Image 1 (cartoon, rainbow, N blue to C red):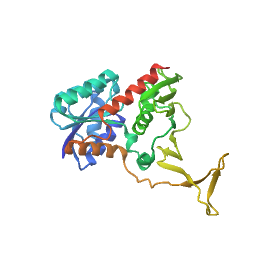
Image 2 (cartoon, rainbow, N blue to C red):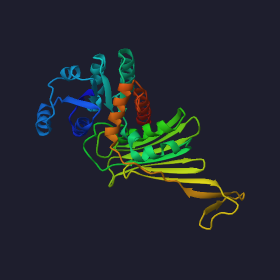
Image 3 (cartoon, helix red, strand yellow):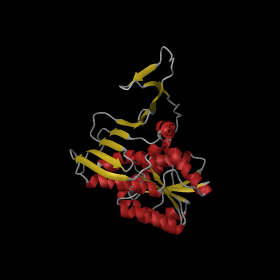
Image 4 (cartoon, rainbow, N blue to C red):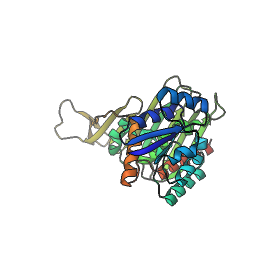
Length: 319
């Protein structure tokens, strides 16, 4: 079992602590949080071992799980990597692209593995249909959240939209050609609502909307490709796959047939795969353990986390 330590015991940090303790692939050694009052409360309530310094925690583990505010990701990762420890870094990988690129170089120099916490890659709905998303040409995403003061220290693009940016980059096999965007600050000092249009070299266009001042929560993505429409509801963990094929000469009386102006007939049918329930955060942590133990490539690499950050920063720069 890999010895794991967590940096950061906030809302998400506590979830990581609980899941690492449950996992049979890790031995949770303890955690560090600079806010001693909160840290002691967490240690007393849940029985986790509290380390009063980052260095002491890093020294005691094989893997460091970084769940601190984005501003400190680089500093924490640098310390852990230089000590020869594997790093799991919550998204976004770092505060700047330059910091992210330094993390990649450090990991290569010190021979350690790293994964970025883009948890939607492990969402059971997305996992159920990812194999069916092939050369999409138009993508539309909506990620709307009710207001929560937590996370407002960064623009909504880094808080919410980056989830969809990473998911899109994982299925579009093409480089980004052009980005246009708009963002509006309503309640925070940084934009709370944002819309981005990402154009890829292969002709694919993605239209992304994110808001953290919505009246209701929504996390939906729709992928349109030749002869297929795929809808993913990340929140409700539901999928819908609508496909088209050439209509048979003698279709079933209940078949749904479409005919275009040229007289070509297509049959519409539904091909909804089964969505297998999982704990996405636990799964991302455990697949990282597998990558460390087997010396294989993590599901979400440091490079992929950096690409998502790079596109997110381009979106912000276009406001």
